[in-house]
Length: 235
Image (cartoon, rainbow, N blue to C red; front, side, top):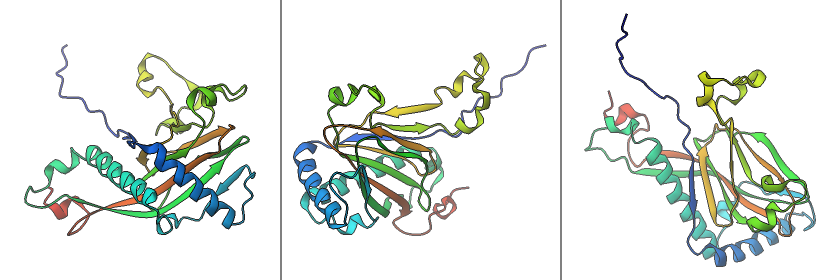
């Protein structure tokens, strides 16, 4: 008996965008100093292992370097969201604009050292999130840590099926589920944009320089009209 092939679908992809800011070094030096000053102003000792600011950083980044990073983040969001939704948006009427309005729902910075980490979590009240690296040890120095090695300070993303892999059973039939997690190397001047629901973790970090990051949550809206696809004429 011969079976007729009617098609195949790979569903529920997990889009992640990784971008580097051109000429980020000079920008990051200024930002690192400004964020360190904010940290002290908020009552945190400079030698404290971990610090997280309030989420109103967008209102306090008045420096030209800060505005440049925010613009870089917005452009990275637009590109990732556009790529992720390319198929879904094909059904929209060409006459209606799909230009995006990016709403930064929250932005904050974190400083970590001496083994500090951020346990597995996801973000709520937004559709996209991201992490921009302001400062961290260079890769060669960072990876020489005697305990953490190459995982020192990186961001680990856990696949959407991770919590279904009980017993860690792997055979030829479910090889498509591998790898269960993906590590993104932290590089100063780099931003990683990811869906807010995606579980992730900042691995323990220890280095000569503090690991300073800017995190953000964003929602995406149409420039006009509603945000649902049917508002654009989708059927």
